[in-house]
Length: 216
Image (cartoon, rainbow, N blue to C red; front, side):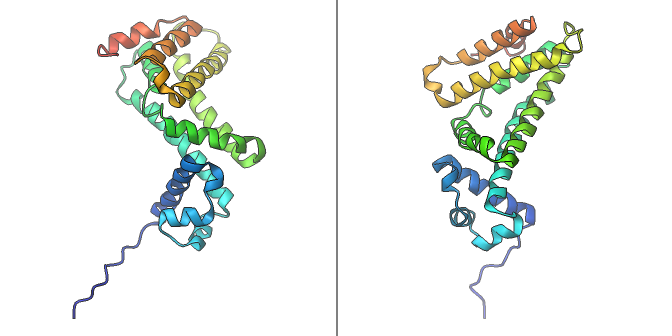
């Protein structure tokens, strides 16, 4: 006699962890950190609440890991453009900066998540640690690109330049993600390339336009 039961498919632990992290991020994006209760996360992921304890020591641990995952994804999306970029240092830097100011890095959901997590940075030492680690991961990538510019001969300059450039990029990213409708197409991208180029005394805008003739 044929059974109506669907075949059971055992998911790997990585898949289960990912589903819980993604569920937490979706809930936080919709309603802030308070919306990511254990019950809500379990329902969203389609698992029992008890299973969360198997993969994470606490709900707070899951929330911290969710923040790390979001920030790591954003940095990875940003860095991915370097895979196909020409070896010219100015072109590579321009390509990286431009990616920081365009989708998928620029995204309303991501800035909402970032804002939701930001309070935790001030009150939770572990979330603060995640924030510092992910901030430095991005800034180190930026600094490495700056260090390869021929103009950077003083070894102390790249770090200060990376901090300054990162500040400009962060501010533009936040505004472009939060209220994209108040900017003209390509406006934030162009302003960012000009501003970072001014700090470093290189023409990033021309380098990017030359490399990407279809720039809006």
